[in-house]
Image 1 (cartoon, rainbow, N blue to C red):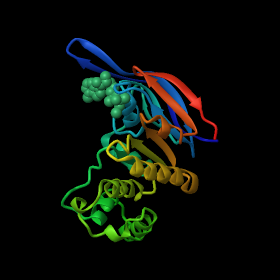
Image 2 (spheres, protein in one colour):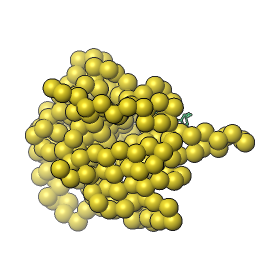
Image 3 (cartoon, helix red, strand yellow):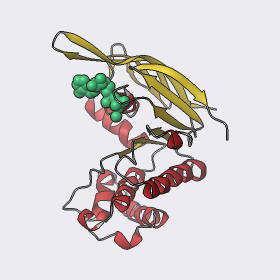
Image 4 (cartoon, rainbow, N blue to C red):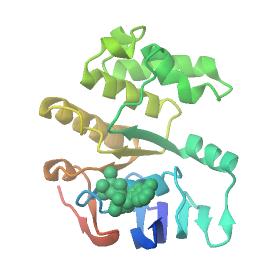
Length: 233
Ligand SMILES: Nc1ncnc2c1ncn2[C@@H]1O[C@H](COP(=O)(O)OP(=O)(O)O)[C@@H](O)[C@H]1O
Ligand SMILES: [Mg+2]
């Protein structure tokens, strides 16, 4: 199996006045292509900091990160902002707890936001219809976010994450704002995207039931890697 993520001694330090906060402290692990990995740990343990760095949305203070063999961060190497943008668009889809939909754009327009920079917009429109169908929200295509339920809004956010055909989906507490039935549906959807579409999924959750969907769990404690547990079906 091929490593799609190689993290080595990732460290992120924030300074608060004279105090140094180690949001991440020398965290090392690998994730293989096609895995579904859950990231758990108490609030403040560094989960968001970690997945933002893995997703190239934030840079570490030190340490090394490779994505699909490409060196993104290491000592003395810093990709330019435009370099990072290309990496993000090429490899990643992001789902957050807050849906971050643009209120004045329709469902269709929101989903196409990450694709407007791509040349083949027509192909993306066909893809859009496919994704809407898969997520069961085709009938919402021309609606505004304010006309949708919370579960539908999260599906639109997931559709937006899928429009550029990511190899890796990063979901940071995607069901934090949803009731248990909607959460269960999102959990099944992420499992399906992993099993049937080969997408590597990195899921941050503090719901222990939810964490079981991973074939591996990475647990953080105070910015350090506490355990990685292989989960069997
Ligand atoms: N921008 C920031 N400035 C200062 N401290 C931060 C910042 N972002 C996160 N932290 C601190 O880093 C630690 C880890 O935060 P975070 O990654 O958000 O944890 P989690 O997602 O597990 O709740 C916390 O102590 C938090 O207060
Ligand atoms: Mg967080």
